Image (cartoon, rainbow, N blue to C red; front, side, top):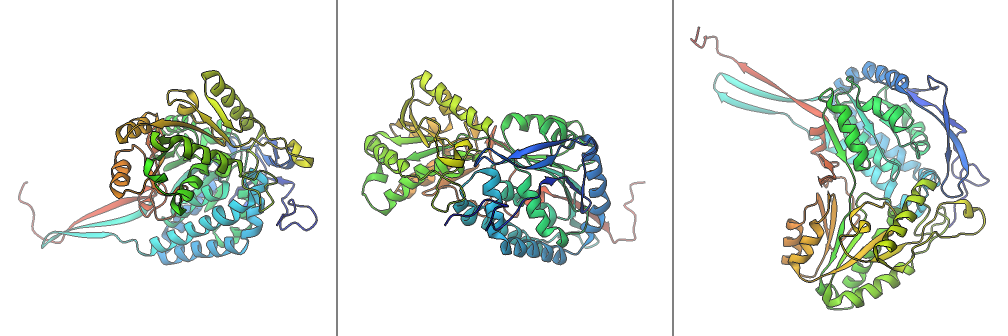
Length: 506
Protein backbone atom coordinates (compact mmCIF):
# COMPACT_ATOMS: atom_id res chain seq x y z
CA UNK A 1 0.00 0.00 0.00
CA UNK A 2 1.21 3.50 -0.82
CA UNK A 3 -0.13 6.47 1.16
CA UNK A 4 -0.76 9.80 -0.52
CA UNK A 5 1.49 12.66 0.52
CA UNK A 6 0.01 14.88 3.27
CA UNK A 7 -2.27 17.50 1.79
CA UNK A 8 -2.64 15.80 -1.60
CA UNK A 9 -5.75 14.13 -2.98
CA UNK A 10 -6.67 11.07 -0.93
CA UNK A 11 -4.25 11.88 1.90
CA UNK A 12 -5.14 10.76 5.43
CA UNK A 13 -3.80 14.00 6.95
CA UNK A 14 -2.90 17.56 6.08
CA UNK A 15 -0.27 19.78 7.67
CA UNK A 16 -0.92 23.45 8.38
CA UNK A 17 1.04 25.92 6.31
CA UNK A 18 2.52 27.45 9.48
CA UNK A 19 3.10 26.37 13.08
CA UNK A 20 3.58 28.93 15.81
CA UNK A 21 4.54 28.04 19.39
CA UNK A 22 2.00 26.18 21.50
CA UNK A 23 1.84 28.13 24.76
CA UNK A 24 -0.89 28.14 27.39
CA UNK A 25 -3.25 26.06 25.28
CA UNK A 26 -3.10 28.19 22.13
CA UNK A 27 -0.85 29.07 19.23
CA UNK A 28 1.34 32.10 19.90
CA UNK A 29 3.42 33.89 17.26
CA UNK A 30 7.18 34.18 17.87
CA UNK A 31 8.21 37.25 19.85
CA UNK A 32 10.72 38.35 17.23
CA UNK A 33 8.54 37.39 14.27
CA UNK A 34 10.97 34.88 12.77
CA UNK A 35 10.08 31.67 10.92
CA UNK A 36 12.07 28.95 9.17
CA UNK A 37 11.20 26.44 6.45
CA UNK A 38 10.55 22.78 7.19
CA UNK A 39 11.29 20.56 4.17
CA UNK A 40 10.37 16.90 3.83
CA UNK A 41 13.39 14.64 3.29
CA UNK A 42 11.20 12.49 1.01
CA UNK A 43 11.38 15.02 -1.85
CA UNK A 44 13.49 17.83 -0.40
CA UNK A 45 10.64 20.32 -0.75
CA UNK A 46 9.32 22.63 1.98
CA UNK A 47 5.84 21.70 3.23
CA UNK A 48 5.34 24.11 6.16
CA UNK A 49 7.08 26.87 8.10
CA UNK A 50 7.88 26.94 11.78
CA UNK A 51 8.11 29.72 14.36
CA UNK A 52 11.73 30.48 15.26
CA UNK A 53 11.82 30.60 19.03
CA UNK A 54 14.08 32.72 21.22
CA UNK A 55 14.57 33.36 24.91
CA UNK A 56 11.47 35.58 24.98
CA UNK A 57 9.30 32.70 23.74
CA UNK A 58 10.86 30.37 26.31
CA UNK A 59 9.93 32.82 29.06
CA UNK A 60 6.33 33.01 27.88
CA UNK A 61 6.11 29.24 27.84
CA UNK A 62 7.59 29.05 31.33
CA UNK A 63 5.03 31.60 32.51
CA UNK A 64 2.24 29.38 31.20
CA UNK A 65 3.78 26.22 32.66
CA UNK A 66 4.22 27.77 36.11
CA UNK A 67 0.64 29.02 36.06
CA UNK A 68 -0.60 25.48 35.36
CA UNK A 69 1.82 23.35 37.38
CA UNK A 70 0.30 23.73 40.82
CA UNK A 71 -3.22 22.70 39.91
CA UNK A 72 -2.05 19.83 37.67
CA UNK A 73 0.22 18.48 40.42
CA UNK A 74 -2.66 18.47 42.90
CA UNK A 75 -4.98 16.44 40.69
CA UNK A 76 -5.43 12.99 42.26
CA UNK A 77 -3.20 10.35 40.65
CA UNK A 78 -6.19 8.34 39.44
CA UNK A 79 -7.49 11.36 37.53
CA UNK A 80 -4.08 12.11 36.00
CA UNK A 81 -3.86 8.46 34.99
CA UNK A 82 -7.23 8.77 33.29
CA UNK A 83 -5.93 11.74 31.26
CA UNK A 84 -2.90 9.72 30.14
CA UNK A 85 -5.13 6.84 29.09
CA UNK A 86 -7.31 9.22 27.11
CA UNK A 87 -4.21 10.59 25.37
CA UNK A 88 -3.23 7.01 24.51
CA UNK A 89 -6.72 6.29 23.15
CA UNK A 90 -6.79 9.47 21.07
CA UNK A 91 -3.34 8.76 19.66
CA UNK A 92 -4.38 5.22 18.76
CA UNK A 93 -7.54 6.47 17.08
CA UNK A 94 -5.41 8.66 14.81
CA UNK A 95 -2.51 6.24 14.47
CA UNK A 96 -2.56 6.02 10.68
CA UNK A 97 -2.52 9.77 10.05
CA UNK A 98 0.19 10.29 12.69
CA UNK A 99 2.28 7.55 11.09
CA UNK A 100 2.05 9.27 7.71
CA UNK A 101 2.75 12.66 9.28
CA UNK A 102 5.93 11.42 10.94
CA UNK A 103 7.18 9.56 7.86
CA UNK A 104 6.68 12.64 5.70
CA UNK A 105 8.58 14.89 8.10
CA UNK A 106 11.33 12.48 9.16
CA UNK A 107 11.77 10.31 6.05
CA UNK A 108 11.42 6.96 7.82
CA UNK A 109 9.36 4.15 6.24
CA UNK A 110 5.70 4.25 7.14
CA UNK A 111 5.87 0.51 7.86
CA UNK A 112 8.01 1.43 10.90
CA UNK A 113 5.82 4.26 12.14
CA UNK A 114 2.73 2.06 11.77
CA UNK A 115 4.25 -1.02 13.40
CA UNK A 116 6.62 0.48 15.98
CA UNK A 117 6.81 4.22 16.63
CA UNK A 118 3.13 4.99 17.17
CA UNK A 119 2.09 1.76 18.93
CA UNK A 120 5.04 2.21 21.29
CA UNK A 121 4.05 5.83 21.95
CA UNK A 122 0.53 4.70 22.79
CA UNK A 123 1.85 2.02 25.11
CA UNK A 124 4.09 4.45 26.98
CA UNK A 125 1.15 6.63 27.98
CA UNK A 126 -0.81 3.56 29.09
CA UNK A 127 2.14 2.14 30.98
CA UNK A 128 2.76 5.30 33.01
CA UNK A 129 -0.96 5.66 33.67
CA UNK A 130 -0.83 2.21 35.22
CA UNK A 131 2.42 2.80 37.09
CA UNK A 132 1.03 6.03 38.52
CA UNK A 133 -2.00 4.22 39.94
CA UNK A 134 0.35 1.85 41.79
CA UNK A 135 2.67 4.58 43.08
CA UNK A 136 2.84 4.66 46.88
CA UNK A 137 4.73 6.53 49.52
CA UNK A 138 6.07 4.81 52.61
CA UNK A 139 5.93 4.96 56.39
CA UNK A 140 8.71 3.98 58.77
CA UNK A 141 8.00 3.50 62.46
CA UNK A 142 11.18 4.65 64.20
CA UNK A 143 9.74 3.96 67.63
CA UNK A 144 6.27 3.88 69.12
CA UNK A 145 6.09 7.71 69.18
CA UNK A 146 8.14 8.65 66.05
CA UNK A 147 7.17 8.08 62.44
CA UNK A 148 8.88 8.95 59.14
CA UNK A 149 6.45 9.57 56.27
CA UNK A 150 7.71 9.72 52.67
CA UNK A 151 5.62 11.44 50.01
CA UNK A 152 6.31 11.71 46.27
CA UNK A 153 5.81 15.26 45.02
CA UNK A 154 6.07 16.75 41.51
CA UNK A 155 9.16 18.77 40.66
CA UNK A 156 6.98 21.52 39.15
CA UNK A 157 8.04 22.75 35.70
CA UNK A 158 10.42 20.62 33.63
CA UNK A 159 12.23 21.28 30.36
CA UNK A 160 12.38 18.57 27.73
CA UNK A 161 14.45 18.68 24.53
CA UNK A 162 13.88 15.87 22.04
CA UNK A 163 15.68 14.74 18.86
CA UNK A 164 14.53 14.36 15.27
CA UNK A 165 14.98 10.61 14.76
CA UNK A 166 11.80 9.51 16.59
CA UNK A 167 9.78 12.72 16.99
CA UNK A 168 6.53 11.28 18.35
CA UNK A 169 8.01 8.36 20.28
CA UNK A 170 10.61 10.61 21.94
CA UNK A 171 7.85 13.05 22.85
CA UNK A 172 5.96 10.16 24.48
CA UNK A 173 9.10 8.94 26.28
CA UNK A 174 9.51 12.38 27.84
CA UNK A 175 5.92 13.54 28.33
CA UNK A 176 4.29 10.38 29.70
CA UNK A 177 6.37 10.07 32.91
CA UNK A 178 6.59 13.82 33.45
CA UNK A 179 2.82 14.27 33.22
CA UNK A 180 2.16 11.17 35.28
CA UNK A 181 4.40 12.58 38.00
CA UNK A 182 2.35 15.79 38.07
CA UNK A 183 4.66 18.22 36.29
CA UNK A 184 4.02 20.88 33.69
CA UNK A 185 6.31 20.78 30.65
CA UNK A 186 8.03 23.06 28.20
CA UNK A 187 8.99 20.86 25.25
CA UNK A 188 11.42 21.85 22.50
CA UNK A 189 11.28 19.54 19.49
CA UNK A 190 14.20 19.30 17.08
CA UNK A 191 14.18 22.00 14.43
CA UNK A 192 14.13 19.29 11.73
CA UNK A 193 10.92 17.65 12.96
CA UNK A 194 8.59 19.94 14.96
CA UNK A 195 5.51 19.69 12.72
CA UNK A 196 4.56 16.09 13.51
CA UNK A 197 4.69 16.86 17.24
CA UNK A 198 2.40 19.85 16.67
CA UNK A 199 0.00 17.72 14.65
CA UNK A 200 -0.16 15.22 17.51
CA UNK A 201 -0.68 18.07 19.99
CA UNK A 202 -3.62 19.36 17.96
CA UNK A 203 -5.30 15.97 18.40
CA UNK A 204 -4.87 15.69 22.19
CA UNK A 205 -4.78 19.33 23.34
CA UNK A 206 -8.38 19.32 24.60
CA UNK A 207 -7.52 16.50 27.02
CA UNK A 208 -5.03 18.62 28.99
CA UNK A 209 -5.48 21.82 31.01
CA UNK A 210 -3.94 24.83 29.22
CA UNK A 211 -0.29 25.34 30.07
CA UNK A 212 0.43 21.78 31.22
CA UNK A 213 2.24 21.08 27.93
CA UNK A 214 3.88 23.91 26.01
CA UNK A 215 5.90 23.60 22.80
CA UNK A 216 8.57 26.09 21.80
CA UNK A 217 10.10 25.57 18.36
CA UNK A 218 13.51 26.70 17.27
CA UNK A 219 17.21 26.05 17.06
CA UNK A 220 19.35 24.78 19.90
CA UNK A 221 21.39 27.88 20.56
CA UNK A 222 18.37 30.20 20.30
CA UNK A 223 15.66 28.24 22.13
CA UNK A 224 17.19 25.09 23.60
CA UNK A 225 20.07 26.81 25.38
CA UNK A 226 17.96 29.40 27.25
CA UNK A 227 15.49 26.68 28.20
CA UNK A 228 18.20 24.39 29.60
CA UNK A 229 19.89 27.24 31.45
CA UNK A 230 16.71 28.72 32.92
CA UNK A 231 16.56 28.96 36.72
CA UNK A 232 12.80 28.51 36.36
CA UNK A 233 12.94 24.80 35.45
CA UNK A 234 13.29 22.08 38.06
CA UNK A 235 14.71 19.49 35.68
CA UNK A 236 16.14 19.18 32.17
CA UNK A 237 15.69 16.02 30.11
CA UNK A 238 17.62 15.85 26.83
CA UNK A 239 18.03 13.26 24.11
CA UNK A 240 20.56 13.92 21.36
CA UNK A 241 24.22 13.83 20.48
CA UNK A 242 26.90 13.80 23.16
CA UNK A 243 28.46 17.15 22.24
CA UNK A 244 25.11 18.92 22.61
CA UNK A 245 24.47 17.03 25.84
CA UNK A 246 27.61 18.58 27.32
CA UNK A 247 26.28 22.04 26.48
CA UNK A 248 22.89 21.24 28.03
CA UNK A 249 24.58 19.97 31.17
CA UNK A 250 26.80 23.05 31.36
CA UNK A 251 23.80 25.37 31.12
CA UNK A 252 21.84 23.44 33.73
CA UNK A 253 24.79 23.32 36.10
CA UNK A 254 24.64 27.08 36.66
CA UNK A 255 21.43 26.52 38.63
CA UNK A 256 22.26 23.02 39.92
CA UNK A 257 19.32 21.80 37.85
CA UNK A 258 19.20 17.99 37.68
CA UNK A 259 19.50 16.50 34.22
CA UNK A 260 18.90 13.23 32.45
CA UNK A 261 20.84 12.82 29.24
CA UNK A 262 20.31 10.10 26.65
CA UNK A 263 23.21 10.63 24.26
CA UNK A 264 25.18 8.99 21.47
CA UNK A 265 26.24 5.43 20.92
CA UNK A 266 28.43 3.13 18.87
CA UNK A 267 26.79 -0.14 19.76
CA UNK A 268 28.55 -3.48 19.21
CA UNK A 269 26.52 -6.38 17.82
CA UNK A 270 28.35 -9.62 18.66
CA UNK A 271 27.84 -12.90 16.79
CA UNK A 272 29.50 -15.94 18.36
CA UNK A 273 30.50 -18.98 16.27
CA UNK A 274 27.63 -21.11 17.52
CA UNK A 275 25.12 -18.86 15.75
CA UNK A 276 26.08 -20.74 12.58
CA UNK A 277 26.08 -24.22 14.15
CA UNK A 278 22.89 -24.79 12.19
CA UNK A 279 21.29 -22.98 9.27
CA UNK A 280 17.93 -22.68 10.98
CA UNK A 281 15.43 -20.06 12.15
CA UNK A 282 17.80 -18.82 14.84
CA UNK A 283 20.58 -18.10 12.37
CA UNK A 284 18.06 -16.39 10.10
CA UNK A 285 16.97 -14.27 13.07
CA UNK A 286 20.61 -13.36 13.75
CA UNK A 287 21.05 -12.22 10.14
CA UNK A 288 18.02 -9.99 10.55
CA UNK A 289 19.62 -8.71 13.76
CA UNK A 290 22.76 -7.83 11.80
CA UNK A 291 20.69 -5.92 9.24
CA UNK A 292 19.00 -3.92 12.00
CA UNK A 293 21.68 -1.26 11.42
CA UNK A 294 19.43 -0.04 8.59
CA UNK A 295 16.36 0.43 10.83
CA UNK A 296 15.20 4.05 10.75
CA UNK A 297 17.97 4.72 8.19
CA UNK A 298 20.53 4.05 10.95
CA UNK A 299 19.38 7.22 12.70
CA UNK A 300 19.16 5.53 16.08
CA UNK A 301 21.38 6.18 19.09
CA UNK A 302 21.58 2.42 19.66
CA UNK A 303 22.15 1.58 15.99
CA UNK A 304 24.16 -1.70 15.93
CA UNK A 305 26.84 0.08 13.95
CA UNK A 306 29.72 -2.20 14.95
CA UNK A 307 29.30 -5.87 14.01
CA UNK A 308 31.79 -8.21 15.71
CA UNK A 309 31.73 -11.69 14.18
CA UNK A 310 33.74 -14.60 15.59
CA UNK A 311 36.50 -15.86 13.31
CA UNK A 312 35.18 -19.43 12.95
CA UNK A 313 32.10 -18.44 10.93
CA UNK A 314 33.18 -14.95 9.91
CA UNK A 315 33.34 -15.36 6.12
CA UNK A 316 30.19 -17.45 5.70
CA UNK A 317 28.10 -15.37 8.08
CA UNK A 318 29.34 -12.10 6.58
CA UNK A 319 28.57 -13.26 3.04
CA UNK A 320 25.02 -14.07 4.08
CA UNK A 321 24.75 -10.76 5.96
CA UNK A 322 25.73 -8.86 2.82
CA UNK A 323 23.16 -10.80 0.83
CA UNK A 324 20.48 -10.05 3.43
CA UNK A 325 21.37 -6.34 3.39
CA UNK A 326 21.13 -6.25 -0.40
CA UNK A 327 17.50 -7.40 -0.08
CA UNK A 328 16.54 -4.28 1.91
CA UNK A 329 14.03 -2.34 -0.22
CA UNK A 330 14.73 1.38 -0.46
CA UNK A 331 12.14 3.73 -1.87
CA UNK A 332 9.20 6.00 -1.12
CA UNK A 333 8.76 6.16 2.68
CA UNK A 334 4.98 6.31 2.25
CA UNK A 335 4.98 2.88 0.55
CA UNK A 336 4.49 0.04 3.05
CA UNK A 337 6.86 -2.16 1.00
CA UNK A 338 9.73 0.27 1.63
CA UNK A 339 12.18 -0.92 4.31
CA UNK A 340 14.54 2.06 4.36
CA UNK A 341 13.57 5.62 3.54
CA UNK A 342 15.29 9.00 3.47
CA UNK A 343 17.83 10.53 5.81
CA UNK A 344 16.29 13.39 7.78
CA UNK A 345 18.10 16.24 5.99
CA UNK A 346 20.64 17.21 3.37
CA UNK A 347 23.09 18.00 6.18
CA UNK A 348 22.76 14.52 7.68
CA UNK A 349 23.19 12.93 4.26
CA UNK A 350 26.36 14.93 3.67
CA UNK A 351 27.69 13.84 7.09
CA UNK A 352 27.12 10.17 6.27
CA UNK A 353 28.79 10.45 2.87
CA UNK A 354 31.81 12.17 4.46
CA UNK A 355 32.19 9.24 6.85
CA UNK A 356 32.07 6.81 3.93
CA UNK A 357 34.97 8.71 2.40
CA UNK A 358 36.81 8.66 5.73
CA UNK A 359 36.34 4.90 5.93
CA UNK A 360 37.82 4.37 2.48
CA UNK A 361 40.75 6.64 3.32
CA UNK A 362 41.44 4.60 6.46
CA UNK A 363 41.48 1.38 4.47
CA UNK A 364 38.00 0.05 5.18
CA UNK A 365 36.57 -2.13 2.41
CA UNK A 366 33.06 -1.44 1.12
CA UNK A 367 31.20 -4.75 0.91
CA UNK A 368 27.90 -3.23 -0.24
CA UNK A 369 26.42 0.25 -0.55
CA UNK A 370 28.82 3.09 0.10
CA UNK A 371 27.01 5.74 -1.90
CA UNK A 372 23.96 7.93 -2.24
CA UNK A 373 20.88 6.15 -3.55
CA UNK A 374 19.54 7.77 -6.72
CA UNK A 375 15.76 7.36 -6.80
CA UNK A 376 13.46 8.34 -9.68
CA UNK A 377 10.79 10.98 -10.12
CA UNK A 378 9.88 13.25 -7.22
CA UNK A 379 12.10 11.21 -4.92
CA UNK A 380 15.16 12.40 -6.86
CA UNK A 381 15.26 15.52 -4.68
CA UNK A 382 15.17 13.51 -1.45
CA UNK A 383 17.99 12.41 0.82
CA UNK A 384 18.72 8.72 0.36
CA UNK A 385 21.82 6.65 1.21
CA UNK A 386 22.25 2.97 0.40
CA UNK A 387 22.68 0.59 3.35
CA UNK A 388 26.43 0.16 3.69
CA UNK A 389 28.70 -2.53 5.15
CA UNK A 390 32.33 -1.56 5.78
CA UNK A 391 34.98 -4.13 6.71
CA UNK A 392 37.89 -2.89 8.78
CA UNK A 393 39.39 -2.67 12.27
CA UNK A 394 38.03 -1.28 15.52
CA UNK A 395 40.60 1.55 15.75
CA UNK A 396 39.19 3.22 12.62
CA UNK A 397 37.04 6.32 12.94
CA UNK A 398 34.08 4.58 11.30
CA UNK A 399 34.19 2.12 14.22
CA UNK A 400 34.70 4.75 16.92
CA UNK A 401 32.58 7.74 15.89
CA UNK A 402 28.81 7.93 15.65
CA UNK A 403 27.80 8.24 12.00
CA UNK A 404 24.02 8.16 12.54
CA UNK A 405 23.28 6.61 9.20
CA UNK A 406 22.72 3.18 7.58
CA UNK A 407 26.35 2.14 7.99
CA UNK A 408 27.79 -0.84 9.88
CA UNK A 409 31.50 -1.45 10.38
CA UNK A 410 32.44 -5.14 10.63
CA UNK A 411 35.46 -6.90 12.07
CA UNK A 412 36.34 -10.37 13.38
CA UNK A 413 37.18 -11.48 16.91
CA UNK A 414 39.00 -14.56 18.20
CA UNK A 415 37.39 -15.56 21.50
CA UNK A 416 35.15 -14.38 24.33
CA UNK A 417 37.78 -12.13 25.88
CA UNK A 418 38.60 -10.53 22.54
CA UNK A 419 34.89 -9.90 21.88
CA UNK A 420 34.35 -8.14 25.22
CA UNK A 421 37.58 -6.13 24.91
CA UNK A 422 36.64 -4.90 21.43
CA UNK A 423 33.03 -4.21 22.41
CA UNK A 424 34.16 -2.06 25.35
CA UNK A 425 36.80 -0.21 23.31
CA UNK A 426 34.53 2.80 22.80
CA UNK A 427 33.73 6.14 24.41
CA UNK A 428 30.08 5.11 24.32
CA UNK A 429 28.00 2.58 26.23
CA UNK A 430 24.35 2.92 25.26
CA UNK A 431 23.40 -0.40 23.70
CA UNK A 432 24.85 -3.74 22.57
CA UNK A 433 23.71 -7.02 21.06
CA UNK A 434 24.79 -10.55 21.89
CA UNK A 435 23.90 -13.53 19.67
CA UNK A 436 24.68 -17.05 20.86
CA UNK A 437 23.01 -20.40 21.45
CA UNK A 438 24.80 -20.81 24.78
CA UNK A 439 22.99 -19.35 27.80
CA UNK A 440 26.19 -19.08 29.83
CA UNK A 441 28.00 -17.15 27.11
CA UNK A 442 25.00 -14.86 26.74
CA UNK A 443 24.88 -14.12 30.46
CA UNK A 444 28.63 -13.56 30.88
CA UNK A 445 28.83 -11.34 27.81
CA UNK A 446 25.81 -9.30 28.88
CA UNK A 447 27.33 -8.64 32.29
CA UNK A 448 30.81 -7.86 30.93
CA UNK A 449 29.78 -5.39 28.22
CA UNK A 450 29.76 -1.77 29.39
CA UNK A 451 26.37 -0.68 28.09
CA UNK A 452 23.07 0.33 29.63
CA UNK A 453 21.08 -2.13 27.55
CA UNK A 454 22.35 -5.44 26.15
CA UNK A 455 19.90 -7.10 23.79
CA UNK A 456 20.38 -10.86 23.89
CA UNK A 457 19.35 -12.80 20.77
CA UNK A 458 17.24 -9.81 19.74
CA UNK A 459 17.72 -6.14 18.90
CA UNK A 460 15.82 -2.86 18.64
CA UNK A 461 13.03 -3.71 21.09
CA UNK A 462 11.94 -0.75 23.24
CA UNK A 463 9.20 -1.79 25.70
CA UNK A 464 7.94 0.83 28.12
CA UNK A 465 8.74 -1.28 31.18
CA UNK A 466 12.46 -1.87 30.40
CA UNK A 467 14.94 0.74 31.66
CA UNK A 468 16.94 2.46 28.92
CA UNK A 469 20.05 4.60 29.23
CA UNK A 470 23.79 4.72 28.86
CA UNK A 471 27.16 4.14 30.42
CA UNK A 472 30.22 6.36 29.87
CA UNK A 473 29.57 9.20 27.37
CA UNK A 474 26.19 7.81 26.39
CA UNK A 475 24.39 9.67 29.12
CA UNK A 476 23.14 10.07 32.67
CA UNK A 477 19.96 8.59 34.10
CA UNK A 478 17.38 6.33 32.49
CA UNK A 479 14.29 6.50 30.32
CA UNK A 480 11.21 4.27 30.56
CA UNK A 481 10.38 1.88 33.42
CA UNK A 482 8.64 2.94 36.63
CA UNK A 483 11.95 4.32 37.92
CA UNK A 484 11.28 7.31 35.64
CA UNK A 485 8.79 8.65 38.18
CA UNK A 486 11.73 9.05 40.55
CA UNK A 487 13.39 11.28 37.95
CA UNK A 488 10.30 13.51 37.78
CA UNK A 489 9.37 13.63 41.47
CA UNK A 490 11.13 14.49 44.69
CA UNK A 491 10.68 12.80 48.05
CA UNK A 492 9.21 14.77 50.92
CA UNK A 493 9.96 13.37 54.35
CA UNK A 494 7.81 14.29 57.32
CA UNK A 495 9.55 13.18 60.50
CA UNK A 496 6.85 13.34 63.17
CA UNK A 497 7.07 12.91 66.90
CA UNK A 498 3.80 12.06 68.63
CA UNK A 499 5.37 12.16 72.09
CA UNK A 500 4.44 15.09 74.37
CA UNK A 501 7.77 14.80 76.23
CA UNK A 502 10.90 16.79 75.47
CA UNK A 503 14.19 15.10 74.60
CA UNK A 504 15.89 16.51 77.65
CA UNK A 505 18.91 17.97 75.80
CA UNK A 506 18.20 21.62 76.69
